[in-house]
Amino acid sequence: MPQNDREPVAWRGYARGPGTALTIGLLVLGAALLAHHLLQVDWAAMRGVMADMPRSALLAAGLLSAASYAVYCCFDLLGKRTTGHALDSARVVAIGFVSHACSLSLGPAGAGVRFRLAMRHGLPAHLVAALWIFNVASNWLGFMLITGTAFATQLFVLPDTWALGQEALRWLGVALLAALFAFLLACRFAHHRAWTVRGVSFSLPPAWVAALQCGLSALNWLLIAGVVHVLLRGQASFEQVLGAVMASAVALAIIDVPAGLGVTEAVFFALLGSQVGPTELLGALLAYRAIFFVAPLLLAALVYLLLEWDAHHRPAEIDSSPSRA
Figure (cartoon, helix red, strand yellow):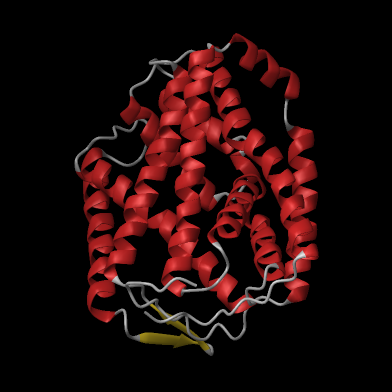
């Protein structure tokens, strides 16, 4: 393995990582949710919307979606760089893509795909758990940065019927940014410390890793909003679409529905329904589902089979201990 110019961060502990039974259980649940999700897709409506949508909008949405998935896969590459595990970058990206596509459509059960593939390619369960936590943390750090900035600067304007006023949102934004700043300071000055919870040892990443997590995640959220914005074809401002995307993320964190079915639509109609016609808004959201969820999920199913075939014909023994510069 090439030598690193920075010393990788050792992920200590995690001795009680998910076992084989948990992985199999998550896979079975994930397969059931996948079948349920595909059966619930209104394929006829999607075909009609895609046929009526301008090709330029579909192409732009497709490119932005591909960029979003590429950025998310960088979380896995950053995790590899941070922990120093020896799984090659191509397989890291492939596993990251499949895991992300499945998690978006299947919810937490999609994590079973990550554990299955990573362990099949030689990574131990405790390290896979650490990398999963790293990805989840990365996703929400960018959310805090975007949402905190938008609330603090009053970039988002909620409907008057919503309970929270603009002043309350501004202070919420300040609180989010303060929490994020405190986390970055902790990573700068206390990343060598470890905290043990029920026999599992946790340590913070270095500040440069945390900063990259924030930047990559913020870019990913902006790309996701860009997908919906180009499909709406200027009927709502980018700031308004971004606000709806972030609000739907909060709603889905509270009400975890695979692929956000129904929840995402409800939030978008509540925030944008007064200025975008229901037919246009629903059509854009259907196209968004087809491009950002369904198409990547179908591609991920193929990549998953290829990774399983690769693991079966090429048994890997990965040295999970971090390399030293």
